[in-house]
Length: 102
Image (cartoon, rainbow, N blue to C red; front, side, top):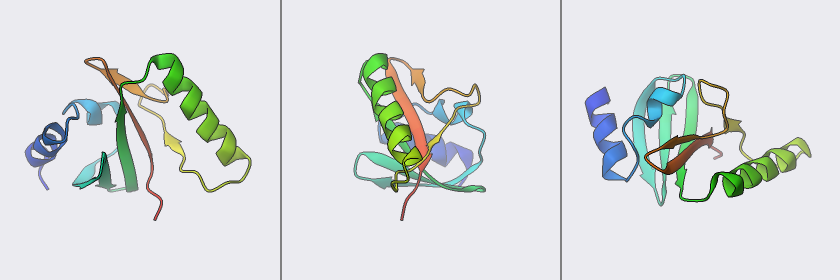
């Protein structure tokens, strides 16, 4: 899938086409799955999610997921942005990426 088609897929499903610039990966396919996007990349499969939560609510939710994962439960890891942040905010919408669990 070329980059123009990937950007169109993101926008079609309500994601900013710039969100992928925040992550260090090359996306080769985008598959819509309910409210998220399954991203196939050269380094593996990931999920892109978006939220309208406040920053505090999202930080709390992501920290809880990280804590549960550290305790050994099968929770997908959060993929940090290029700036080592847990999520990115574009035009008031928060986005984060995590591992795709089969």
